[in-house]
Length: 123
Image 1 (cartoon, rainbow, N blue to C red):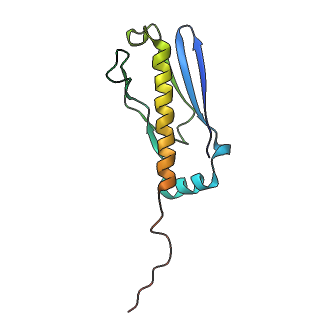
Image 2: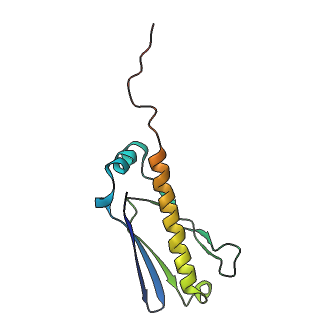
Image 3: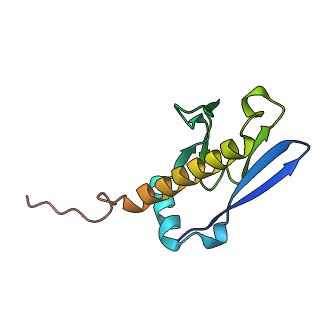
């Protein structure tokens, strides 16, 4: 099991979420799969809390789960999109990103190497 941590803070009405992938906690299986298939990418933007009064959109941005972390997302409570229900929105973002990261690792672990190995041919 790999370990991701999220550090949360508020400073001058700016809410911050820092997502940290601790490489020391990557399993050997995850490392091997990344060497074979590449690092999974996670979409950090998109629409959050869709079809609710708290819906918000962040620009599209992809990040590789190892190379592009730690990653910090800021939410300024003085911006119109985050004036109301700031904590609800920030927590929804955090949970959505962690779900995407979990899915990326699950997908990576399910990949099977059907190429490597010897092939024999009878001629």
